[in-house]
Length: 136
Image 1 (cartoon, rainbow, N blue to C red):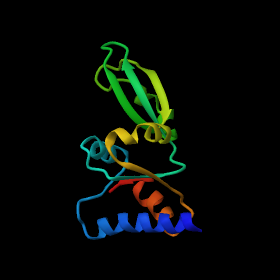
Image 2 (cartoon, rainbow, N blue to C red; image 1 turned 180 degrees about the vertical axis):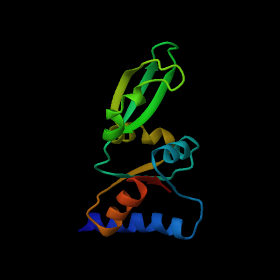
Image 3 (cartoon, rainbow, N blue to C red; image 1 turned 45 degrees about the horizontal axis):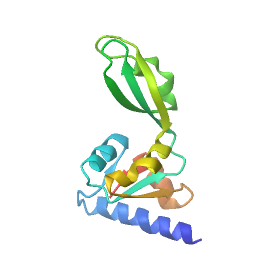
Image 4 (cartoon, helix red, strand yellow; image 1 turned 90 degrees about the vertical axis):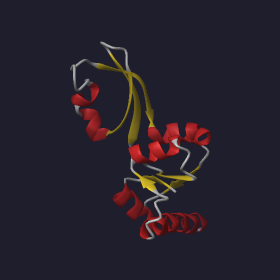
């Protein structure tokens, strides 16, 4: 299947950057987003079934806007919806699947977006070892 060959090639390139320790790779939601904001990501690689939601939260006392990326387990923990310092409630202004947010926003970061599966050995390793999100 052509898609799997492309996926293997893409993830192979990603692993190559890591093995050569070029510093030209990121993984995980926070580091990948930081690198995107700096314009340092050429190719954003995301697992097609990434189950993380992007929340725009508003502090009920200060009206400060906070952005959090939470998986299902973290969503169940109400502490993620309270301010750590004041215990003020964080109201949900917006909740969007991170996959959908990436699909709508990636262009403004100057990168391309590639979805991968966990059906190939490389794809599975990318999802397990790197949280299903990264960039080169």
